[in-house]
Length: 160
Image (tube, rainbow, N blue to C red; front, side, top):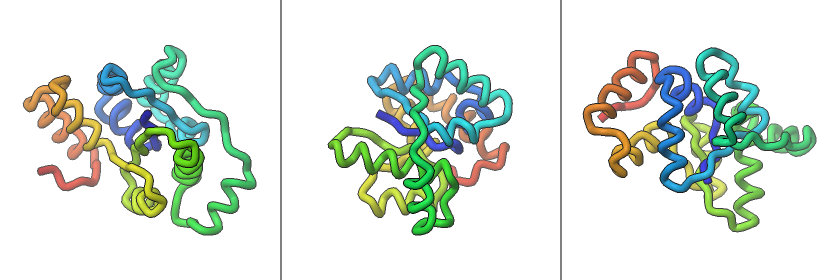
């Protein structure tokens, strides 16, 4: 299972406009999930339309919102996190208690560090792209083009 934050969705579905990359991830046997609040943070086209299409096609599952109280308590401890990041980490903690096998897909370094502090497995957009390349679903040439496009869009990462 992959639990997505908004930044990777914006990068893949918007900046790259490549929903097929998430379909490839599904083909590797992963289920994709997006917290309710995160889905609401994806507001621009084409990523909003691509996300909605994938939700409608049941390729991505949009989760029910958590209670306002849960999010507020967590906010008081981790005020630097956005609302979607807080909800994602809270959901991940619930899954962790149930011994679910999953990975949080988060690009923001602060949110990742908080997640990793709770012993959550975290990757980002680049990790997804590298996995697809490693599995032969994206060619080395295509991965370079994708990295370049992300860099041109202002994606902050040290591309190696």
